[in-house]
Length: 121
Image (cartoon, rainbow, N blue to C red; front, side, top):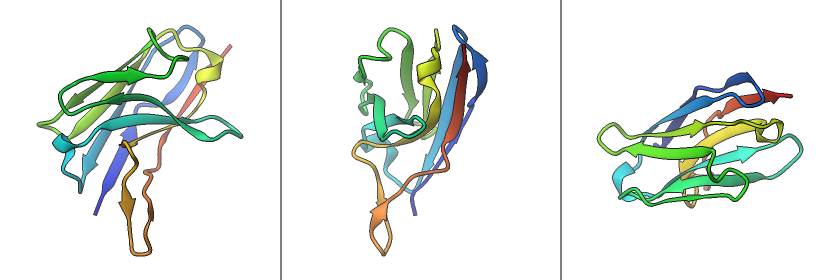
């Protein structure tokens, strides 16, 4: 049974930093591309950063140069260091496989509870 537990969110002023963490279980972590997704208020959930099993990273244009994704295959964890935060970074952040994990029956996409990030101006 897949389980993804995110932590580290909070309220921060514009220009500040946060580090998010995710603990994964129930998947063969080291074989999967892992990602951080963001769902801003009233918007779709979007992938903001991903990392392959051997550490190749990819970022959405909006976060390039400010966010850094990393992983520890021995501990089944993935992190997101977020610097120079902007109000538009506000949202609920989720970690997941890329593509996202499925669970069930009934078959459905699995999402953890996420962690709220709020950036004040």
